[in-house]
Each structure stands twice: as structure tokens, then as C-alpha cells.
Length: 213
Figure 1 (cartoon, rainbow, N blue to C red):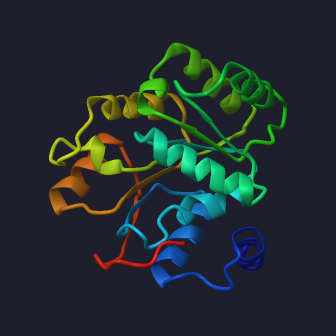
Figure 2 (cartoon, rainbow, N blue to C red):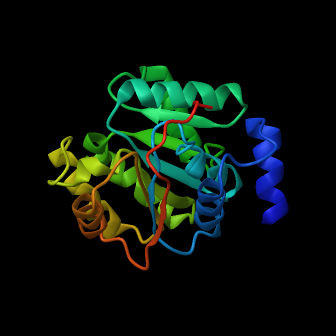
């Protein structure tokens, strides 16, 4: 695992080393795929790499829940430029593109490594069927909740649709990674409670602005 993760970091993302020890240990814990993980790292500290890098090495699809369509598209575009198979299904996805994504997900071994969806889509019966098919094939590897503070009613960006994620978690027993840029103790505790994180490993980096990747 040690060699694989450093090799992928260099070959796929172009970095010879991790930005900081918190980022490195969080990536390795997520890749181990044995526990739920909570990560609080400031914007620009390399938070997205914590799930994008392990996703390239896990055998199935990493499902990423994000509330921001612009951010989703930016991340998908960046991953595709790096030759990483990533896709998004949302209201902006064109019909032909959606069909191609669904056809890949229906394969015995999908090529898609990261699939981005909104919390609103996650709650729909049609998407639950897609997730169930992946899960039954053993190809639903990891659930990622980006902007996880939106789950908490203590947070300033609380969004009710995020509360439905716990229902999804109850259906599919896979490791969960929750990420946020800032979280008070109340928000952190609420996120862990709302998402039903168990045996959670927590990683935090002080609020310091980093130059973005």
C-alpha cells in the first residue's frame, strides 16, 4: 500500500510528496477502507486529495456527495485531465453523457472511479437502484460527503437534504469519509451523529491558508 499510494501520488497527481502529515495519514486511513473518517482541513490544504487518491486505488466506485454543481464540474474536469475516470450525474448532465455513465456503472467491473452526485439525487429511488446494483457487485467502495458541515443544524450552511444521507448509509454498509474546511466542536459532533459514523478516525489541520493544488 505504501508504495502504491506514493506511486499514484506522483504518476496521477504530479506530486513527489504529500503536502503535510495530516493529509498523508488521512489518505492512508481512507485507503485502508476499514473505518469511517472525519477530516477537517482548511480550503487549499489538499482536502480533495484525501479521497481522490485512495479512489484511484480502491477496486470499486467512490461515491462523492457534494452540494455545489460548479465545484463538482471543476473536480471532474481536473480528474479527467489527469486520465482518472470520473463522472457526475445531476441536473446539468446531458442525456447522452448520462446514458454513457449509466452504461459503465451497469458493467460487472465499472471503469468509473469517482462518481459525483448531489444530496438531492442521492435520495431518489432511481439512484438508489444504481447504488444497490453497484453494492451487490461489491463495487461500491466508499461514500464521501464533501462540505459535511451542511449536515449539521449547528452549521451556517445547513441543508435539509443532507439529513437523508443517513438513510442511504443504513442501506449500504460501506466506509464513510466526511470532509469540511471548518467545524466547531458542536458541528463535528453533530456531523458524526447525523451520519452515524462509527469507530471514526479524525484528522484535523489548523486553519491556515495554503496555496491550492
